[in-house]
Amino acid sequence: MPEQRTAKSPVWLKRLGGRIRQARRIRGFTQTDIARPNLTKSFISLLESGRTYPSVSTLVTLASRLQSSLALLLLETPQLPRETALNLLELARASAPANAAKTDRLLATVEALSEDANDLRAELLLTRGDIAVVQGRPRDAERAFSDALAWSRKNELRPFEPRALSRMAHLAFARHEEDAGRERLENALAQFRSTRTLRSAEGCKALLTYGELMSRQSRTARAQRILLEVAQAAQRQDLTLILGRAQLGLARIHLAAGRGPAAVTALRTAKDAFAETDDSLDLATGLRTLGRLLHEAGELADAHEVLQRALQVQDRVGDIRSKAATLDELARVLVRMGKLAEAQREAKTALALAEEHRDLVQKARCLVTLADVAKAQRRWKQAVDQLEEAVELFKRTRQTAEVGAAARELGMLLKERGDHAAAADYLAMAIATEPETHKATG
Image (tube, rainbow, N blue to C red; front, side):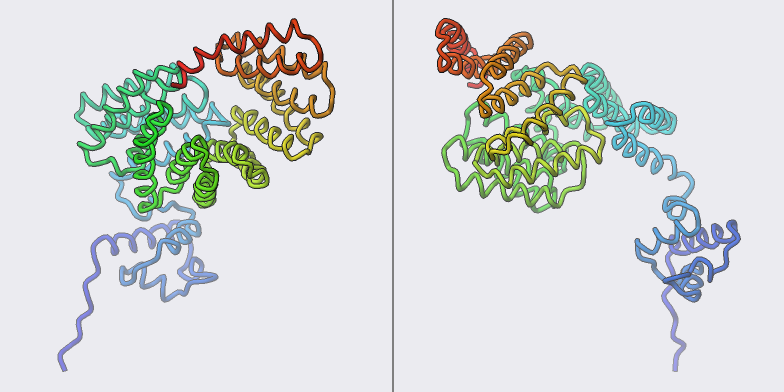
């Protein structure tokens, strides 16, 4: 019989085996030492000689037992700076909400590692901007995204250009600059298409934002088509966060059209998608929006459950800045459920957080919620005082729609209590805001 020849091991597998053997010897371990408790000495021997393929979980386990890292076992030395820089950027994003000093140190290290890599430099600039957004520094974010765009154009890094533009569009929308935001977003979408990255996570996110913009501008049919397209793409690619957000947009459209059952179906799809999504600031925001829309749809038990999960996610990722809004929404749900003591407790906690972070708009919203609790408890004077303060805060922060809503609520309460003169003033204020409100939302 002819001699049976074994297949030749690939070079990378032999190198991996050599690195495992070297790491084991540096640590003074035997093959038996690192095999225990769930591997065998013969398997380690085959692995070190490049004659067997380990699973990912086995490599992770071995890296831990060898007191090494997965990158050191798998990569060549020239590849380590890139791998290290990308890992540090991910760590910086994770630490940004709760530990600014640590985040700055991580970014400084990436700065050094990315000196000779143009694409890493672009990624660093985008990450700096994202972190500035999370930390409530929109001007710094705008500067970082502008720098990323300029760097990408200078170095012909075309896939980075739409990523920077879409972020700049988000900042414009946050400043209520709809025209500037739309122009940037449409440019970003055109570049996502030209670079064939529209179906990437960031491309889908930009298209989702465009669908939401169309919905705000009452271009409902187009918005619905775009959101359905995003939902289908996200489902195919298992982008659960984007799928959930697209379903939230569809639910808003259904609610506005009075299609309650269709809205609830979309909201339940969003809930299922978010259940499979890893913790992040974006997930916490999505859950809060889902809770609010479930509340609006009358699904109070689901709204309560979702908002509780949103709070848990915020605690795990260190998102203190947005927690007041979630607690306030939870308090509103509890009011409708008739759980007034719990509602008052959550609303007071939300108010304290809003005051701590000097968020006047959220403080005003919390005061409106506390006024709802006070009305339900027949504490009329307290409700009037809280609504009066809320109206003044909304006026100071130029929240036209919320001035109108709070003034209308206060006017009706004063009218019911017999104070017709004061009621007339506030109802007139509410009516006066209507043209501006329609202009802002039209």
